[in-house]
Image 1 (cartoon, rainbow, N blue to C red):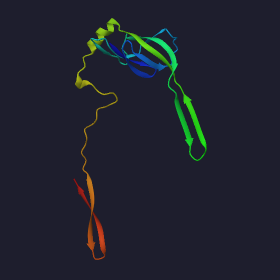
Image 2 (spheres, helix red, strand yellow; image 1 turned 135 degrees about the horizontal axis):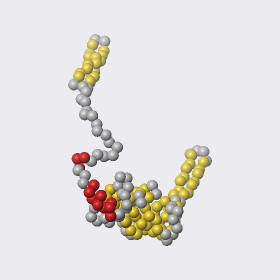
Image 3 (tube, rainbow, N blue to C red; image 1 turned 90 degrees about the vertical axis):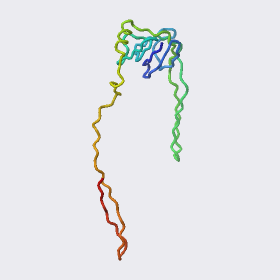
Image 4 (tube, one colour; image 1 turned 120 degrees about the vertical axis):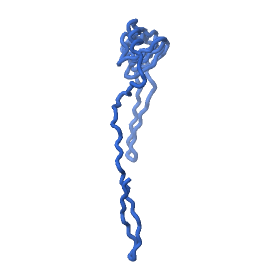
Length: 161
């Protein structure tokens, strides 16, 4: 049993027992946090994909602690100007542990009925059908050296293929 959720502007693949460090949440330590933005869920039998979210699916997490992430140092300098700037940052994070993945009974039946997708009918997102490619003739221009009594000259010749 696993799910793909959207939390804190990122997507996470979670299973029961998974620990996550996400951007700081307003929940208190020891409380539960329910995520309803489930993009994909698999209950061991059927795979449910949401458009964009799976209806009735929830992921229940417990807030373990609020902490700070690793220190990131940004250093800028401009050469030959005696100018330097150092800035440090530690992102506030919340550590979660996934307790359970819940499905609604109606969503499982609907998802298995809609899950039949033929491979020829799938279209990648953001693509559109393209027109057939037209073959245009290419023009190749070459120069040939001709020697004359006054020196060499070049005469262009065109060839259409």
